[in-house]
Image (cartoon, rainbow, N blue to C red):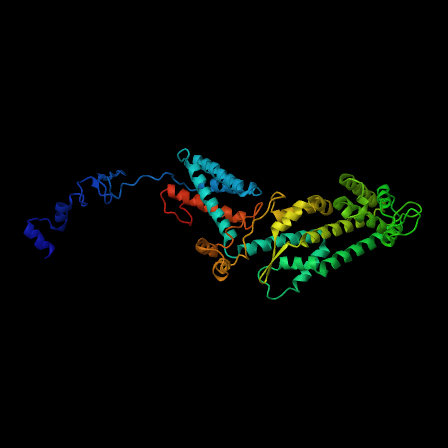
Amino acid sequence: MGVEDLQRDLGVGGGVDALRADLLGPSGNGWPSGMEFLGPGTHAAPSGSSQAIAEPGSEGDVAPPLVQHGPFDFITALSTLGSGGAGLAARSAPPLLRGTAAILGGTLGGEAGGQIQGAPRGMGSLIGGVGSAAGEGVGALWKWLSNAGIGAKANINEAQSGALKDVIDTVNPSLGGAVDAARHNLSPYLKGGDTAAAIQETALGQGGKQALGGAFEQGMLNTTLAAQGQGITSPALEMAWRRLPSGLDAAGNVVDDLAYQTYRSLAPAPNGTFSASQAEGLLARLGDAAFKGEAGSPIARGIGGLELRQLYDRARQETISGLPPQAGPIMDATRREFAGGNALMEATRESQAFQGLPNRVMLNTPSVQKYISDNRAELQAKLGDEGYRALTDAIYAGGQVGTRDILTPGSGEALNALRQVYGRGQGGAPQIVGSAVRTAFPNIGGQMTGRGFNRVDPAVQALLDYLGIKAADQFTSGQPVKLGPMPGQ
């Protein structure tokens, strides 16, 4: 049927335009003249007006966004700046305190941005606080997974062993070189990191002794050459010498040949001075007496520990100052490196300092931590304040000396729990159920003292905080939550 036929049947004249006017109204849009159709779910409004009256429950019944964005999103920008800045400032604090500081910084920054942007009072702080908290929560979960998951124990142990190796390199470079050389002689079947195995081989094998002895002999030779025959006058050294057993009886007969030879070899010259090598020999014996008592040297007989340590300090200072200016620093560095290196080797020679597993050697940190705690005075004296701080930071991760790590059994592989429960027949039904969890998270029971390891990188944490803040900001502005740029950014 054509338009003309329709017109004829309806009795409407005037062509197509007249028909449209009769059906749709004079305005041609289905609304009375002077009104406009603004979309589904809306009433009409007078032409020229920008207002539309929405029907309740219709698509047009949309609440305005809580936050209006202009050309620049101040809330996201200042929240991220506040969260990242506070987290960076508190980076050395415990994780909970650092996270709280980041959330507080994000909250304050968000409120400042909201005031600039014209948001309702409290809206900016809500966005910044919730978004920062979400980012910090994701970071905490990330850290937990990286510390409890498959291979986490081996990775943490290698990091701790590497930190100890850095201390060895700093305290005695020759000893550090011996550890590096030991890596080349390890078994090809060794799994995981090789730092702990190399340190153990150096401490218990000949490599460590040769490195320490060779460096010390060379240093003392350099000291003697630099001294050019000048002797050392030291009342403290003479007192220490006189306290050595002479090996003679009351009649002057030799009754202990070894003691007699030692006593004679360390005797001062007729002018009362000691050579550099004699001074070192007396200092070594005096140091043993000061920190180990009579078990270390007979010099300690009848003298208290505090008095011995004071005597040792005086003797060391008089020795270094009694040498020529070019020789004193050489001897001081030689003694410090030898004493520090030997102290580290003694700590790692302890019977439980390492844990041997199938094709693995791991540093047994609780045992090393106990050794450091029990011998802290001696270690501090031999390593010096700086070396001692480096050692405790490496082993305790900044924690208090006297605390301990709690290690999970095994090497942290995925099959550890299954081997223990099924293959070795250990444990009953509860352990069988728990083996599923421990298969996915083998290191779930481990606890590290101090700041721990596998911390989220500050840059990554700042990014997580930003994404959390941005998601919260987009939600309140009525936009779909996405990671891409927002309008106006």
